[in-house]
Each structure stands twice: as structure tokens, then as C-alpha cells.
Image 1 (tube, rainbow, N blue to C red):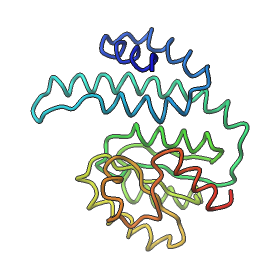
Image 2 (spheres, rainbow, N blue to C red):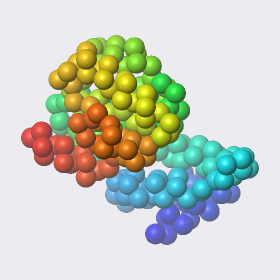
Image 3 (cartoon, rainbow, N blue to C red):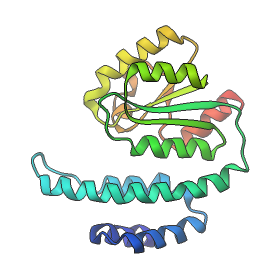
Length: 207
């Protein structure tokens, strides 16, 4: 994909202006889902740093920061597309306390909104008490918890059990690389990690 290869070069060079212009052209051509499902994972998974290689980590962080900027730009295209869809359901999307990687949760909230859901994003490092307050305030129909760091999975099930004790009928879904790797061990109603999962949820629930 020419866009992907050109974007990688611009990310390495930290050419924000050209990356932004290139991405606008790509999204205007109707490639929003390709951007979320193919381009972003390829970019974010393209650097594998060895433990202690902080120069590599530095490059990974600066590329991720640029990708965050491009993801935020893509929201305008989500707004244009969602006018064609309407799902009368509310989804709260959050990362657990201690989970600092929130880009996946941001993208997930955009995808859900693209499909017509009303979405609420609390972002990274959301404490349990804040989650419980948010569920009550938003009267949400679904909760999506994103976990990238596998070390947070033990806490994940503790949080799930607590939430289920307060809201036994709330449907809770997992998302993120860490959750996907251990999905059979998580007390969730399913996974929402890609477009196909959202479409399957819509079909299953008759939305």
C-alpha cells in the first residue's frame, strides 16, 4: 500500500505536515476503516524494542505520538459517516487504572461511533470508583475495557467481578492486545477488537 509506505517514511522523518496532508487525502478517498484496521496496527507493531533499548523506545513513542495526532484528525471523517447510522445504545470505553496505553481505546470509541453508537471515552488510567460512577451516570448499555499491558490482566478480572456485582445485567467486552491474548481467561461477554466484532454485536443484538 503506497500510503502506508509513504507514511512510515514521514513518521521516521517526523514530517508532521506531509503526514497530515497525505492522511487527509487517504481518508477523503473513503479509506477510514482501512486506516483503523490495517494502517495503524501495521505502524504501531512495526517497531519491536529489546528490553533496555531506550533509543528504540524513544522512536516508538514519537511515532505513536504522531499517529495519535492523525487518529484525532480522522474523527472528522467519523462524524461524516455516522450521520448515515443510528444505534440507540450507549457504550462506555475505558482503560483500567494503571493502563496508560489509550490509543486503542480511542480508536475503538471512534469505530463504535462510526457504527452509530453513542460513545463515552474516559481514556487511560480509569480507577474502579470512576468506572462505577460513569456507568451510573451514563446509564450505558455496554462497557468496553481496553488492556494493552498483559500485567494488568489480573486486575482486569478483579474489576470485572466488582462491576458485575454492582451491575449484573451490564454487558462487558474486552479490547486491546493484552486482553486478546488471554480472552479465554477473562470474565467478559466477548471481545470488541475489530470491525467484524462490532458488526457481529449489532447483528446479535438486532440493533
